[in-house]
Length: 420
Image (cartoon, rainbow, N blue to C red; front, top):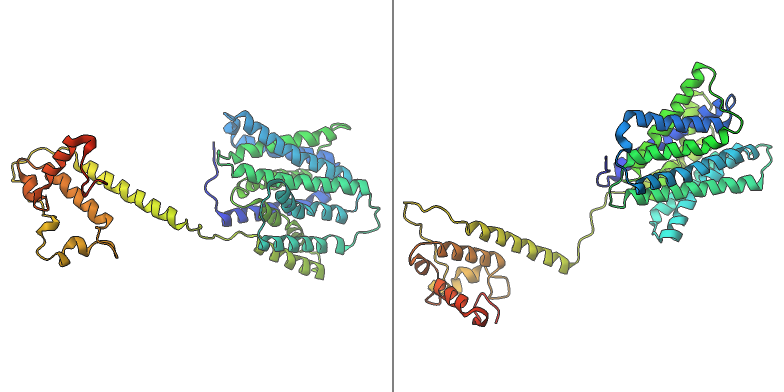
């Protein structure tokens, strides 16, 4: 089961921009294809084919999934599928510009839901990106002209509810991807697409399923299914694992910018001032929403010191454990162990222990204590009286002092190595 790696914000931003471009490329193609196919049939066919495509690429992706994963995928698919069905039904009673603006309101609904439901704090920079994205959405939709179509308040409410479901889908996907229990992005994408295809298929089967009649229409359907749905949803599942929910919504709200670019490049539409202004606002919003790779916060001073002491303790334990391993006796004479006795210093002021002690105190540093303990263990492994010839403390054999302390047991006297 594939699990998403550690967060990489730039990679996530690139994936989400691909999602926005893939969904944006679907708009002019769907606008042309719905002239020959009912909207409900087209939605059911594209999502079902998308799920089958991913399942054929990895037939074993659904094996071994827990019931929880199946439930999460079905819930995500239900939220998006109900939104798609509601948007498709309400589109008959709304002008396209009004419907597009209402769906685009999900970029504002996402941070509001995050604040209300999860008390998530959104940075000021991201809020500015949300505002610019909404302004760009207004320029691309309402300011381009609503037309003479009648606006139904019920249809508008249903479309806004669909936008809220899209926002909830973004928040839930972000929380699942950062839950820490492993995030099977591929499997969840397949379950989502199959659920969406089933829900939209309920609307389509009422009057029968209409399939494309020509080869170009099948080519359009293949693009909508494979590129826009299969790859788009898969890139979104992986992308949101690296980018938070609100910046993800801002990045994916740039669909009108890609729609305008495709219309200019492939359909030779003239560039208008609305495209320039709206595109500039969308570009600024995306720049503000792209997460920055900030260095991790420094731990508190006390916590950092505790970690340092633990690391030193572990290092000393490993070194002492290595020294306690019995080595085979050698025929060569034992090497003399250097004397580290404090009393051996002729001039205490220039003693190495005082020279290497912690600044402002007369106690040896941790490195010196580790070195001293190492020498003691080495000396105790020497045969005969080598220990007493090598390590002394205030004129007495240090090994003998340690033996006396072990015999005393719990009533051991305070010493330099044991607290009183």
